[in-house]
Length: 234
Ligand code: SAH
Image (cartoon, rainbow, N blue to C red; front, side, top):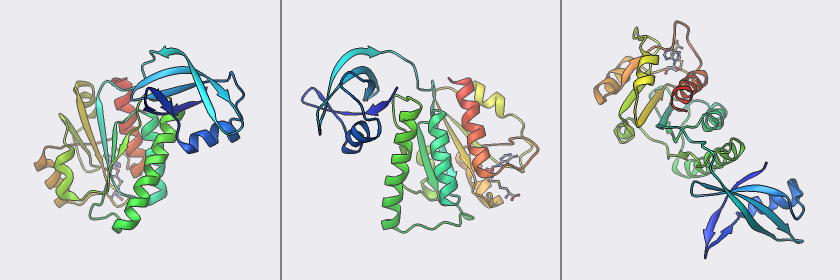
């Protein structure tokens, strides 16, 4: 069933223009077609009423499905090539993360000026919205503006894990299963983190953990971590 995030105005739900377009021209919905509207975390089964250029609806019932993780999950990614980052946004959204933070670390090859950044963040947010609809999430993960090392402390949670391939700490599962309320996951870009960056993160309060004895690509590492969280904090 199709799923749309909607706003509310004067007690009525309001669809975004792109979603009206989707209903009329992609879904080609007829009157009576059922879809789900999500407004601020509440989900409603609605029956659509279609006229030539407009979409109206009638609420049939409120849905009580549980879709969100039991733990607030922040994924910080040392910015890799942009198509990889977009893939990470899509998959991490499906897995339930709450917030995704693009981080320019020393070895990030991407540099974004302010103007380019604004348009990228908009695009990233719309990828998250589509993925959240696809996986019937109750909320859309927030994609933050690009951050630098000095901003990291704003994103600390109760549990903070740093994926570091040189780490001999095989305590990942234990740390994830014991985490409560909030968790931050930090993954490096293609070139990884250098030792001075790792020292800085550990000083901030990150626990450095191994993801196993093989070196994973950054996107695999990010999704592997988000998957574990979603298994244990479903
Ligand atoms: N610089 C490294 C690999 C970087 S992999 C090299 O080329 O040898 C990119 C990111 O994925 C790393 O910064 C780390 O956060 C994560 N990662 C990959 N494999 C990992 C592992 N076995 N354990 C922990 N983290 C890993």
